[in-house]
Each structure stands twice: as C-alpha cells, then as structure tokens.
View 1 (cartoon, rainbow, N blue to C red):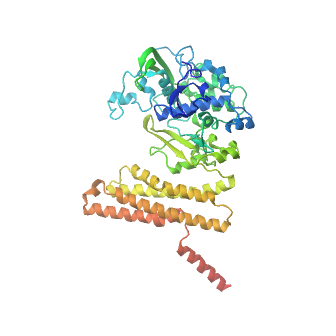
View 2: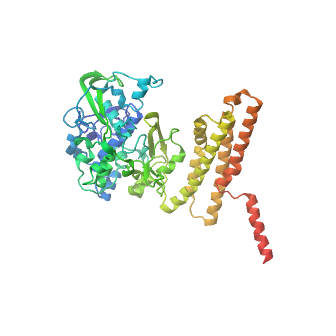
View 3: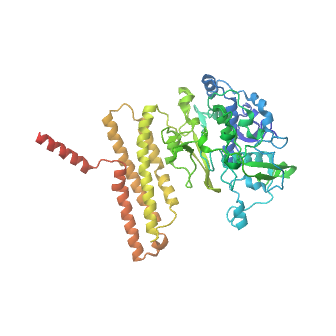
Length: 537
C-alpha cells in the first residue's frame, strides 16, 4: 500500500456516505469529502495532521498565492504529491512510512501496543490490566494499522528507557482551525486542511530530513538529539515545520500477512499481524521546535514548551491558549487568522477551533479529550484589553477552584485528603456559559471613554464574583457529605460547618480582593479623604 496513491483515509462526503480515499482524491467533486471519519477520534486528529503536513509540502512561499487557495479561488496542485510517492510506501520496499528497516529482525510483539491506551509491559507483568485489558493476537487491516502507527508517532508518550516521546512530548495539545462552515456553506475537507498551513521560506526541503524513515535512524545513544545530528546543515524553517508533522521518535517495524481479519473492524484482507521495536530512537527536544498546531508556555527555566492536556481535560481556562501571544504563552501559529484576509475571517463561525489530545500520566494513558473553542477576532489593541481583563477572571476562577478543593477535602475527613476533580470540572462546566457571554460583551465594547470602560470592567468583575461564589457554594453543599462527614457525628458536622464558613469567606471577601474589586467602604473612605483635603485647603 502507498499512502499517497492508495485509498486508506476514511472520510464522510457531502452525501453523508463514508468511504476511503487517497490524498490525491481530496478534490473529488462527485461527492466532496467534508470530514474525516475514522473508527477512533484520535485517528481522526492524527489523519488531519498528516494531511496538513502534505498540504504544507505543497504550500507556496508567496502569501498572495496561498490566500487565493485559502479563499477557494484556486485549488492546490495535489498532483505534485506524486513527486514524493516513493517516500510513502507502507508495507513493502527498503524504506517504509514511519518504520525503521535497519535494525536486525527479531521476534514480533503484539500489535495492540500501537494503541496508546494498551497496557504496558510492567502492567502486563504485574497482571494489573483491570479496566483496559490486554489483547493478544491483534490483527489490523492496512488502513487501520497505518492510522494507528501515525497516531502513536504523533503522540508518543514516555515508553521506558530510550523509547522517545513525540516532537511535543507525551500527550500534546493539538489545535486546528477547523470551521464546519465558511460563509454559511459546508467547508470542504481540503480547505480545512489548507488554512492550517503556513507561508514559509527555505527552498526545497531535503527528503531525508523531513521524512526521517528515508534515511538511517538518527539514534539517540549518549544523549544525542536530532539537532545535534543535523548540526552541519541545520533544518530550514520549512524543514522544521514539515518535520513536526512527520517526526518518527519510535523505532518500529511492522509485520504483514497477505490475508487476515482486522480485530478492530472485522474486515478481511492484507493485514499487519505484529510489530518489532527498539529503543534509542530519534530524540526530538521539544524546546527546539515550535509545532504549528500547538500552543506553548514559558517554563521556569526561560524556554517555551508545548502545552499538554491536563488530567481533567479542557476547560474555558484553556481558551487563552487559542488567542494569546505574550511573554508567557504562544498561541498555535496555524490559529493566527490575520493571514486569512478580512473576507475569509468574516466567514468564520463562532467556534472554529478544534482542540484535542490525550491526558497522560507519564506513559499511562488517562483519557482522550477534544473540544471546540470560540475564536476572538479583534485588532491587536482591543484584543490586548480583552485578554487583560479575561486573565483577571481566570485568576478568580482558579482561586475559587483551589479553595473549593481545599475546603471539600477538609470537610470529608480530618486528614484533608480526597479527589476533588469532579467538583472542579463542575465548577468550570456550570460557569462556562456565563464566561463566554461576558467575553462576547467585552469584545463588543467599543467607542467608550476610559472611565466608562473601567466602570464596565468593575461591573463585570462583580457579576463574575457572584457567579463563581454561587456555584462554588452549591457544589460544596452537593459534595461535602462524603467520608466520615456522612456519619453526621458532631465532630464531622462541626468540620463541615467550618469548611463552609471558610469557603464563603474565600469566595466573597477573598475573591473580591483577587479580582481587584473596589468595595463601597473603600469608595467611601476615598471620598471622605477627598473632602477632608478640600476642607483643609
């Protein structure tokens, strides 16, 4: 199978029917592909990134030409992908897509290890695979195993000594500009992919750099990393961007059979039946890359690292990652919509950002998360004002979240321990609608004086305080009667009452201080002081 010319990508067309296509068929007009339609959501996101990578290969270094294609006036030259067909052989030949064909062959292991949630070696040895069971004898059809291999290489978590993580570490956040409609009409898949590419310079990319499986593996014994290996001729901007999509940190070789039944789909045909792995694959140091689809944050040491999905998943607090460029956060380059032009920006729907990723605990997969985020389309000056105010709101909700967690644990038992993640998620979910409504009001505020704006900001902060305080106290009452508090002993009831009082103080006086609210007493004090000065004069 060749991943450029053969159909292996599951899509849903305008007719609503699903089918497999090759990348060369993205422009089909009989039943235009609208969405990816894999059997797993993580496969869909991996496929989207793979196809964005191919589109990035085609993207011109001329902004005007790029924008004409983004606006649908022209089409990308998909036939140019035939130039790199030989780089995408999958199940035959001396060089195979995202596989290492150079190490000495050995006995194949089970194919289920390609799936990120599959139990690891220690879990199997300790017989602790209680919820996600081991699956021996897994077989996958060629399209499915290609999707699984791609997904693992893109998201590769820590995997034991020398088993390297992805170019963004384990469990990276991916954010794509993915509008279901543009100007009220369904967006073809190829346009969704194209608007996530960048206009970059750097000449003709070297195949052995951007498609690492086309050369012997840049192994990492002795702490070597990819940049060290390529130091004589460092990657150009376009090579760096392409490498983000096609990086191959894991040394894997698949074993194939001409006929079998896919364990995941039940389809019969050519299948992969096993895989071999080796350690010390390519070491992609995350701080040396800036993936076009990932937000980055400033670490304590002073460098930028890719954001990862938290255990509790996405909340509206993560919305800042989609729109802030500052000394602390860098939004994904693909989400910078000014490059689209005013006409196309005006056609974007309310929630065009598709965010997703695995929450990981080292090498353990906790959950898959994905969400839609709203888009903030303002000029830089107004955007800065909005984000400054929103950061204050988010500081407020973080203050409430920490206090709710602390007081619930105190209410549950004298030890002050317990898992409050459910209550924390509910705090965000119950205040999400109010948050987005207020952001919309703030973004629409224009043509007002500085004094009026400051007064509006104070009023909105008071609304936000009331919203957070009400929800936090409701959640406390809902969750407090757990642990020995459920026994209704005098000591437990006293402890719950004390925790409730402490939380009430935190979400009223403490939160008001956190939000910088001017209290009536403070106003009166300032007014009195002013009158005294006037009398003295």
